[in-house]
Image (tube, rainbow, N blue to C red):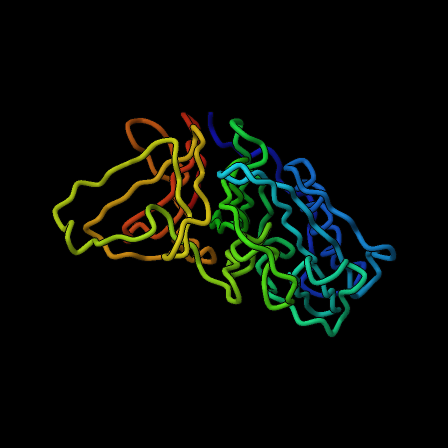
Length: 291
């Protein structure tokens, strides 16, 4: 019932060079291949290759919500592999199949440069032995600085939500990108950072409250509703109502740390100055997350 690193990418990308030389295609292909073992079906568009400037994938995952409904998450992904730089985009999978996404299609999210190049470090794949559908992807520099690039919950964690076919909406009104660059939660027609703990904190009324740790349960929300109710033995929520409510900015290395509580190592996700953080149990092994 612990989290551990089960793979580190061996793909070394280059900051510049030809399409085939950069190895960015290989980097993303490895990430998506790894996700197939976490319950995702990944379809690569015919014609993708290391020599192409634009490469496309479709990702699908059927989940059982915590209310017991079955829903399929659908995403389309494009890697734009320019000679001097690269960018990536997520598209609404419900708006059309992967062959319908072209270079002029408006993305839901775009990002560039968050995966390491050359000697900057590697991509690490972390997994719970409680439920291998849950996972975390971390980038680490050679100096040891870590950032989280994906956090996905285990089975029976999603809230049932309505679907939308418009390209301005995500696969469902509330969903988490399989891998992200900046915002990781898709909420209706906008991206929002996600928070941990209960949906709303009247922290002003609890200024003298003692921090509380809830083992086996982690709420992920957008400050309006719980998108995820994640009940798993190796996830916990630590709440300190005397602190301000702060959401988690995944791009900051300061929101990914190692914490020791009662002799157990935890991967701590979230702003330690905020009222709630997530804890992933690493057992007796130090995960060496920015600490």
